[in-house]
Length: 332
Image (cartoon, rainbow, N blue to C red; front, side, top):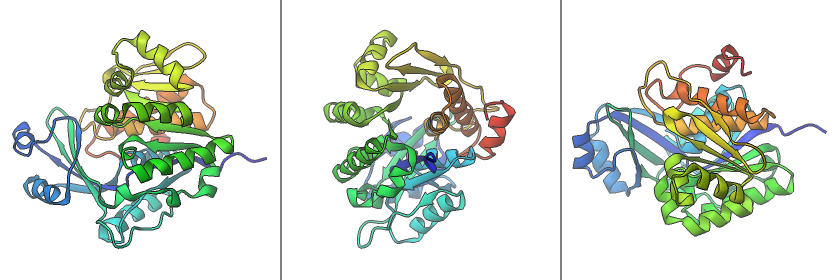
């Protein structure tokens, strides 16, 4: 019997990123919380965009960024997400497919436009995101392709989309298919504000459906109610078979339900330019490694390497081959 033909399939927001440099005064003027993510309506999106500096537009979305990194690692990725039948939707679809990613979700007809995330990056490399979800928030159970999920070693759900009721039902449907076929599931918490708003329902979803939980230290503290590693570890083990917690320049900690905690050091980037997509890249390296049967240290180090590359330049996706980088580091 052959193994899964997809390493990871992501279910997440199909968003076009609009990246520009900004200063703190711009963030204050537009009431954008520094280093965080807020949801905005279309009118506010137009207002913020009109004041932004010269921008770069590229297909984005957290889980989609992870799948793009998996493709750069030489992996086989798929994506389920909703775009509109418009120009930005065409750009998003083309970008993913050009990387070799399977993306066949039907576009939204007679609804809002394709979503976009306005990312203002300050001199300290912090990214402050204002997101108009548009069509992205319309992912529903009918968009879940059962055959794709069956073919994926890991089904990866994006926390940003968890707050959309139809999308949450889609997550449950996808996880049920994965579990029924002996495949694993993963969830990234995405943002502490999501955790704070969805505490109970999120915790129940993780306990019932998720094999691999990904979070940064702030998100983990919000979920587990403590910054103490001992408390986090105890609660994480009770909640999920594996929890991966990133800690910026301090690397990451992998907490298996059974076994010792694994500490993985960060890999210093050539330059710190833009932290957009760091967590997405780390998730890609870790999940790709786990899908290929790597041990926790090797998979986590692959995540650190991918994150290091992504934060060394402007934008959330790799500017050079992650496969070549990983081969040079003797990880692949």
